[in-house]
Amino acid sequence: MSTATAAPPKQSTRGHYVGLIGANTPICQEHYRLTLQVLDFPASEPGQFVQLFCAPSLDPDAAVSGERYNPTQTSRQAEFEWPIVGRPLKFHDEYLLANRPYLRRPFSIAERRDLPASDTAPATTEIDIIHRVIGKGTRELESLEPGESISLLGPLGRGFALPQTLTHAVLVGGGVGIPPMIYLAEKLARQNIPSVAFVGAQRRNLLPLALQTNSQPSPAGKPGLCCTEFARHNIATAITTDDGSLGMRGFVTAALDQYLGAATAAICAGTVVFCCGPTPMMKAAADVAQRHHVPCMVSLEQPMACGMGTCQSCVIKYKPAGAADWVYKLTCTDGPVFNAADILW
Ligand SMILES: Cc1cc2nc3c(=O)[nH]c(=O)nc-3n(C[C@H](O)[C@H](O)[C@H](O)COP(=O)(O)OP(=O)(O)OC[C@H]3O[C@@H](n4cnc5c(N)ncnc54)[C@H](O)[C@@H]3O)c2cc1C
Ligand code: FES
Image (cartoon, rainbow, N blue to C red; front, side, top):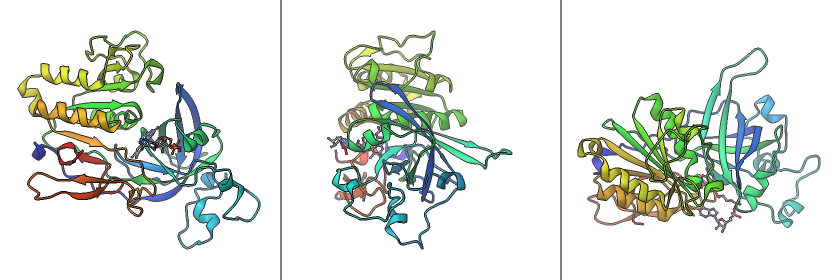
């Protein structure tokens, strides 16, 4: 099965950028869509992520002037984008004493728009992050206002590779694993690869997606053009909620199982499942895909500190087919996308 999956794409150059906040809009309970305007952001792939420093940047003009981190500048102020303006940095400052988040937090790129230069503005990349407020860092993100700026590192990690043999893509997203599927849907549509999406949330008001006005999600888990982010690429979507408050009641993997079970062997032959969500959900999706003889790529969301291969906090056990023993891999730099069959869950 692993022969049908493609080699991971090469990592693009990563950098340290200042993102000007264009919008930070609530989209459902606990979820916000944060739009960052960034100058000179390198090429990125669906599945890649950014590390956000979850507090306003020191210099709000930096994003406008396109200022980037200067590696020759060694002061802590430059290094950490210290959020307190107008006075010298002290490491044990009230920022740390107030127990505010010091480590960056990883977030998938949910959408990317490259806007050409106009008479009044330089060429800019807009990056959308969909974040769920669950702790200290995301509570800081929640309070960011348009016009403020934040520091980001990216694009990081290796994204989803599309195999040459791919004729049909099945996207499976659960909770905060849904955002990278939106970006992937756009790429698949650009490449004219027929796709279908399965998205799951605990309940209706925790689904960070917009519903089409004239289309209701099927309570039987049958994909339809019910979800705006996918319908605009003509991708039918099945929605599941744990409590049945929207779409099919139950786990997204049950709807996936049903779909792959009904697909013909010919369809399954060119199909790959692309999945992101909580670990138990991805493991279950990988099991379903394996049962139907379909390769499955998963984008892992291990907790991360550095996001760049330094701290070793994000290891997973990895054993590709034919290998005598397992080795550790780093989710942040070797992944986050892996062939599900190669992971020791
Ligand atoms: C590659 C990658 C991509 C991600 N993409 C997104 C995204 O697009 N949108 C989004 O909302 N979130 C995403 N996440 C998860 C996000 O990074 C965490 O929710 C965030 O770091 C929480 O920060 P916090 O300070 O608010 O919470 P904290 O105060 O640090 O933690 C609050 C609680 O959440 C738990 N927690 C923190 N991080 C994780 C995690 N990764 N997995 C499971 N439990 C965790 C903690 O153990 C703790 O119980 C992604 C994670 C990774 C690794
Ligand atoms: S997050 Fe630091 S090594 Fe992966």
